[in-house]
Every structure is written in C-alpha cells, then in structure tokens.
Length: 532
Image 1: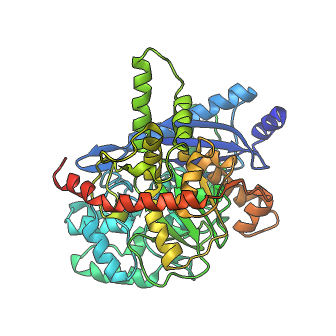
Image 2: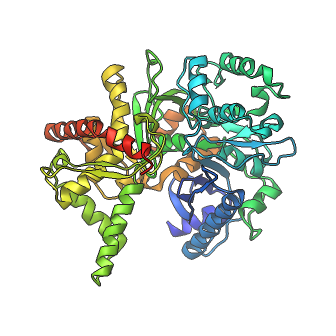
C-alpha cells in the first residue's frame, strides 16, 4: 500500500480535495481508487468584526498554505517524497456569504459568512418577490441588504462570489461555481441548470431605480455541473497553494463546491430519495427530492446536488459548539483534580454515558445557540440550560439533553418534510464531528428523525474527501456515468455503512424532549430580548 501510494504521488496521479470548514481547513490526497493516502489541516476561527462574522483574506491564504504545508509534511513522513504534480484538484468551502469585488479584482467589503443574520429585511422582501424561501445567509440576501443599507461599495461591484468560488478564481483565473454552491447564491432553475432567469429579471427590476452600472447575471460566477472542466491551476495559483514552490501548474480543477455538496458526495447521497446529515459547528440535512414541495417553507432551503438535482435542505446555525464547551469544562475539572485525561477519552466517556440517560432526557432542555437560529426565529444566540427542581438531573441526562439539543432544530425542520410534505427517503447517512464517538450521536439523531441512520467509516474523512472524489469524477469517469452511478459503482461499491434504527421508546422520548424544547423557547427569546 505504501509503495503504491508513493508511486501514485510521484507519478502525478494523486487527486487533491481541499475544504474550508468553519473551524478547520482540511486537505485530503486520494489515489486512483479513491482511497485517502495523506491529509493535512489547519485550525482557524471566524472573527466578529463590526458586528459581522468574517475571516480576513490573510487568514484565508495563510490557512490554505499552512494546510497544504501540513499535507506535504504528512506525505514526506509516510512516503518520503514530494508532491509535484496532481491529476486534478477540487476546492470547496462553507456555502453562502458575501464576497464582492470591483473591476480590478479588489475586495470591496469584508467577507460576510453564512453565520450572519443581519439580512432579515432583504430575505423577507426577496422571498415575497420570488415566492421562494430566500434564507438570510444566501449571497443574494447579503447583496440586497447592502443595497437597502445604502452601502456605498455596491455601485462598484463587478464580481460577487462565495469563498470556494473566490479561491478557485485565484487559483485558475476562472470566475465559475459548481451548481450546488451556486444554489446558495440564489435560486436555480432545475431545467436550465443555472440561475433562475425569471428571478434574475425580477431582481434587476427591483433595483433598477438605483442606477447601478451592472446587471445581476453579469456579476455572478458561471454555473457548472459536476464533471465539467473548470480551468487549470496557473503558475500563480500553484505558488498560492504551495509556498515551497514544488507544486507545478497545469492540473485541471473541477467546479468549486459548497460544503453541502461535498457532504452529499462523501456519504453517497446524491441519488433521488437519499439524504445525509452533516453535524459539526453547524448542521444541515439534505434530502434529494423525487417531487417538488407543495409550497415554500421558511425553514427549508431549496438547493441542488453537485449535478443539479433538487434538494430540500434544513440548515441550522448551531450544532456542536456548546457541546464542545461543556466537554471542555469537564476537562478543566479533571485537570483541577490533578488528573490528565486525553480529550478523546473525555468525549467518548461523556457521550457514551448519555445513552444511559432517560429517552426524554429527564425533562432537561438545552439550547446550543452560539449565534442566531433562523429556523426557530432567533436573531441572536444565547447558550442556555433549562431545568426545574422536579427534573431528573444527573450527568447522563445532562449529556443526553445537550447532544439532543445539537439535533433539535434539525428535527423541527425535517418534521415539515416528513410529516407535512410526506417526503420519502430510502437512506439517510450521517457524517461530521457529532458522529466521532461511535453509535451515540447516530442513535440520538435516529430517534430525532424517527429513521434509520447510517454512518460510514469513510465519512470521517469529510468534505475534503468528497471534494477529492469530485476531482476524480472529472478525470477518472471512464464509463461516463452520471454522478450518482459513479459514486455507487466506482467509489462506494455497495458500502452503505453501519445503520442504527431507533426503538419506539427512543422516538417517543425525543418527541417529549422536543415538546419541552418548543415550550421553553420563550426563555431563549427573553434572554435575547433582554441582552442577557
């Protein structure tokens, strides 16, 4: 295996996937058989600047370069060689947000991430105009909010893109975007596989009196489907990735994608009636639809797979951040007691103990809102833990309540799909940090959604691996299969992972938990209203 991987790298046949997540940038190198052979990472955090969540351009490029440096170090340690050529590259990142540039390519405003919730007025107006749910975090909501706020830079916008689109542009010179990421900019037409022309025209009419020197379609990146060539790595682009100068230019790049799309690929969930749940800093579920929904829903976003199939997405701004904070507190306690314990052991012990808790968490309720949560109508976040003196307050119930909180909002949104719209799904696969402790997050999510949940070993490689698979689809799809068949036959070969089916008691327990959760939401709202 080691010698084969070394030959793959030295002969330039390896594929590179890079994903910019909320807290980590990760690179995964895979071979021709889609197996990971090396990886690198870089930890980073968003910053709250002037009331908006952002990452600086300096942080973006330093993060990419440090991540790639870590990948090179891993390759050298494992195989004693250097990466000089690549068969193909793919770049993905957290979706949505706002990155506007002028005609000279200069950034006009700080990068506004998906996490910002200041776009409520714009999203409401656009939703009514389009008769389509326009989420707060979508790029067009950000653009129109900047127009409503009369920000002076808007008149100079010549190009508007996402984080993945920006990095891809800088690496290749191509202003393009994968259709999945594009579906987080503005609505996509399922027939034309590009921005919905009717809605583009409505937006242009909406802002016509502003006298801007641009039309919407002129400033948006060109939409591409999975498998389409999206340009090649330039000399300058190679230097921006690898400051050592070893990486050579010329590798083809697949269309840049959002983290939702790479999650679907990494879990083999791009086929109709499949779905996946990504649960990390934020969480979202993606269900590939066989029929359109009967009407727009504020808590359900309509996006697409990387090859353009319609997807119902429930996106939650908060997931594991508060869980991690509580686990960190327990680590601090053990250190105070003079005991050194590995962080993974603390996570595993606390998570597994949660399964000893009552199915309804003993009446305990937690809110993991580090930031606002549009699905439940919160513009800001306040982490809270709520109980009465009569609740069964013990460590198992405490941990179960907090893990349940991580998927509670996800359940609220998916109840609309499964109960109201009668959406059918054959398989749901989970991936992300919530599922690292085997069987715990998986079992609680299964209870929340009242559905079997599968987790694959490979899903732990995450979106960077999914992006590498999309790079492989660009150059290795010899049979010219569609993306779903390529993943099913060439990548996963029938592997559907390990499945957990919830018991009736677990489902009933989570239903009781979610009713308590909804009943106590006014407490969370009051905390926000009173600035506490």
